[in-house]
Length: 252
Image (tube, rainbow, N blue to C red; front, side, top):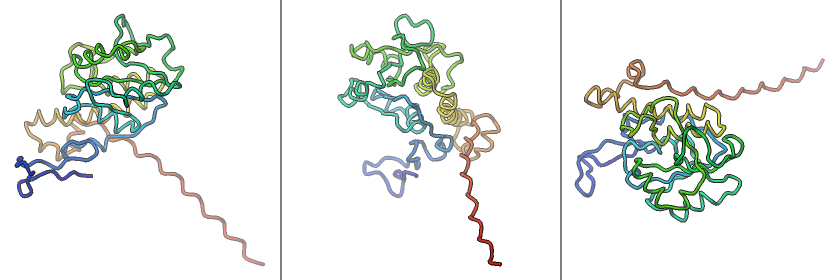
């Protein structure tokens, strides 16, 4: 679906300049849409994202990739935790909360409550914002800060080349969730499904920057050949068509 935004012949009431149509799925301009790279997956874990309001307005935030790939993801915007977010975090005893945030003594990947990483389903609480925003949200919320934590030490650098990370092993939000879910027992296919549309989002941005313009997006085949785009996800196999019933034998 395409959202038809204001144009010169049908301007916005406030008189804004001509704007390009945007995809209703990912919110990006239609030529930069990454929806075709999405392959939806499921997880036994509940994902609750607490997103800083400034991050919600960022054009290249990665939470939309997370939501499109894992549709059950819950997102709550605000500097402070809302009652709805509180219910989402603490309202399911069978999936106890786990904060995806480094602990004060984090020296490696793992869970700080000693419960193991793949033994039980959890409510994964994710803070989305710059590191300064995330630190402020956690430090200002004693109940959130007291949660057991899941710390990550990535084995490779972030693929999110759009925004600089403040330290070598920093990850974008969707990358951190992808690594966390595998650590919590999900199959690697879940991580791959989350990282594919992120690679497309980043690749199209870099292609435009290298070409000094957006016309380069008109040829996605050339972009894939040049390494800017990942391969499209494999189409799900069609169910086998049952054979028609055998005709009865003609009477002798």
